[in-house]
Length: 153
Image 1 (tube, rainbow, N blue to C red):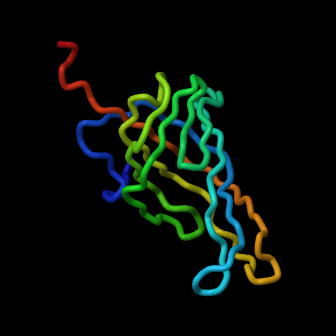
Image 2: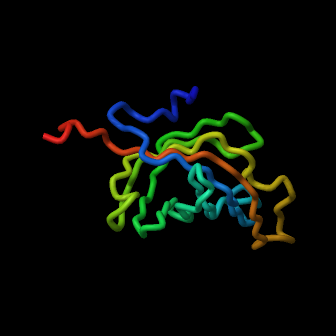
Image 3: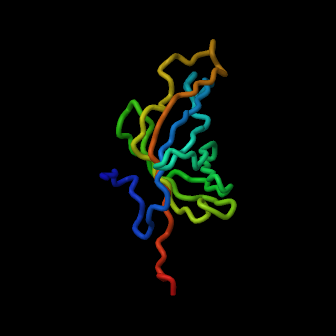
């Protein structure tokens, strides 16, 4: 797959999990320094493996929680807009982990092949401050772990 250089994972990491997300990006109409606008609040998605099984929940943080209870919180390193009608592709680095399990050793997360999820085109003004928009999106996520340099030694 041709991945934009800005969201490529550094050498020394390999894919540990490849999943497909179906969910929403949540926005709120708020007063901003320049008037009013739709402000991103959180993602809410279920990530499915290649068998169609729900294996990870994705929510604010951004956090990914595997079915085994392990979690990883990511910090955005880079974004690349492939399609202005879809949320950007992202590269995130693991900022914290919780629990032992599938997410315990994740080093990087990529969000690729996005579709939808951008802030609403509808007006946000004083008459609808506080309105919430849940915008459908899909994406492919890749989770990476550091390669074992000791090769079992």
